Image (cartoon, rainbow, N blue to C red):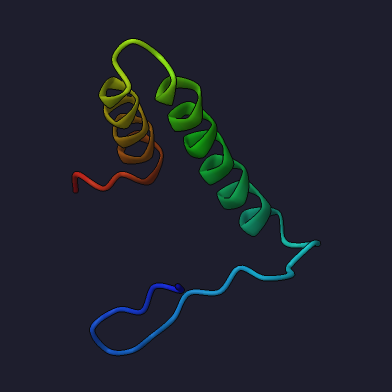
Length: 64
């Protein structure tokens, strides 16, 4: 399911192989997923969510 905001605007990062900004965003998101996957099978899998949340907030300044 693709995310759409309240105005029905959908974000699309398909393609854009030559756009370094898009590639960087994809890389950061892949790393966030990797962090979550890495911790899902640990003794405390919910801690993984905290690490993913912290990583995303830090890289996208979501606390502003």
